[in-house]
Image 1 (cartoon, helix red, strand yellow):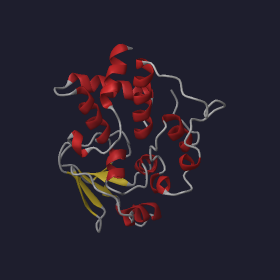
Image 2: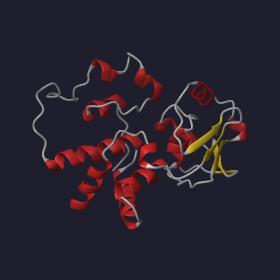
Image 3: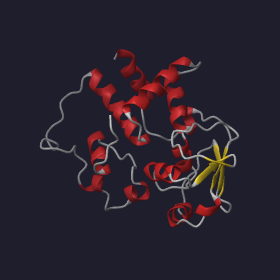
Length: 208
């Protein structure tokens, strides 16, 4: 499955909730979801039919995939990995997604959105423990130090993002002056503010 390249706001409308795919713009009045919160398409404003159990699980999976920008093949791999390790599979899945480098860069406030973070990572603007990493799906571990590369510190998109106030999750620490962040620990479910129902995603994949 190829990556979605259409309007981001269309995805929010389809899921019936803001997914904050455009970062701070989603908090402004110009956000398309504020003007048209109904589903896209010819029948978007019609009455919604009662959803089946499968449909509810599918929508939960699609919502999570869209928030993190994950393709179907990648998502299935994360699901399989989450069921192999000890613990609650749904929480394991969220921890894997939160540990991705592009998500960590976003959570640290070094990019306005996960989409922007992916692009910045691919363009070699970040290092992990002093080494250049240009793979957005790179999984960070507790103790890893994520830094903006020396030649990228004056990039306007990074500087502007760092100037905006954003609540930092408990499992990360950041030194804004030096553009350095640290993965302090593995996140607990309560420390992950993503509005998703991860258990529905596990149920979806366990039946297909």
